[in-house]
Length: 241
Image 1 (cartoon, helix red, strand yellow):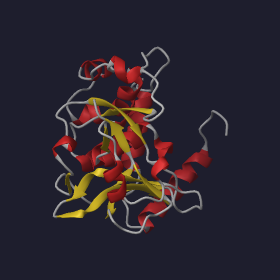
Image 2 (cartoon, helix red, strand yellow):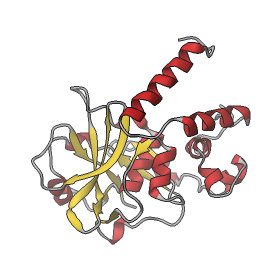
Image 3 (cartoon, rainbow, N blue to C red):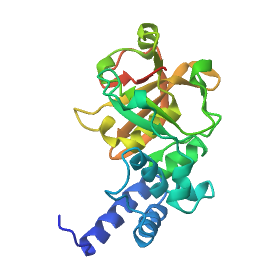
Image 4 (cartoon, one colour):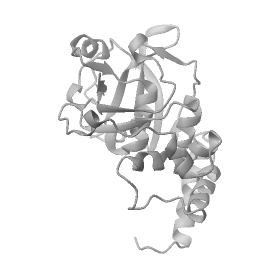
């Protein structure tokens, strides 16, 4: 596909919207408006940014800054901590660096990140005190759970090391926003979804948060922690410091 935008792209957007409406999902007007706003305001990340700022830029371009009352990227960046030195080192057990943005309701962050979520901030609760939602943006090192494929959430929790915590719903959403290839479409034979052991369904601790992509749409929901192990799923976790 070339660099020029043409009527073919318009037709594709129309088909995407029509498919979503058939599934009872909202249209894509807000997402298209956000893209136009980014392009007309110079909001696309450039090569001049410091490496730690790229993930902050991703959130700002999505509209997080606007939703918390910050209209300029430089001001938003001032609210983001620089990556701690210990997290900048290569880590084979937790290879992905993720900026977690907690200042929006989870449902709103999902909407900005094109993740379907039928719940709200009361849907999930922390598995334990160590999995509480932070008040300010933080950096984590995480692994997406592929090494745990075919194991239940309960089994993975039992085997986590002393320096390991199950990923929460917020951390999983943040990870997908920054690294969308960590889950793949389960509508295909090689699809993969993430279990998020750090968050459990409110009122039923036997259900844990779960992030998947199905037929092109990302979705945050929940699944049983002791269900028969699914080879398409694995428990994600982060390093505890």
